Length: 161
Image (tube, rainbow, N blue to C red; front, side):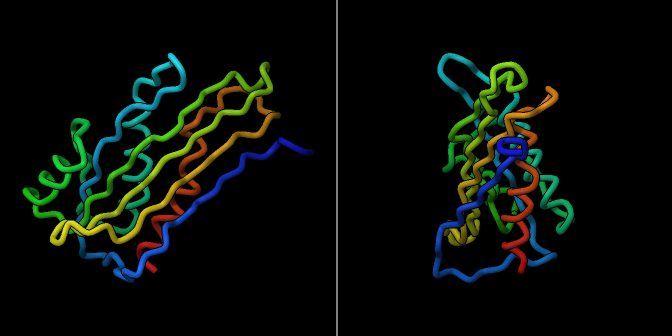
């Protein structure tokens, strides 16, 4: 059936930096600002994104921390340096649209950017834009955050290969 399945896309920015994260490295994940669509503010969406990233990294690393508050990039990098972390993961919600797909036939949509920064040099080693769109035929209960785990996992795996 057309439109039944969720779709995901991970667009990784090309980089000449071939740095790979090691299992002994540590990561500080910034807390993303909540998403908005039009006048709709999606409270807690930033935490959902950061927690999804956290879950993916926790499978591979022992030292991972999610920030306790939303920070601007420079402040998050400073916090990562102060905490002696190897990498800063800086997620940004670009689009967050939660629709009542089951009756409106309008899909949930999400687009996020994830930047991975080497804390010592302050250099971005990799970034990706992750897109997700729900299928039209749902039984309800789907949300934008449900579209994130698979593409986030795909991106995270690339950082360690």
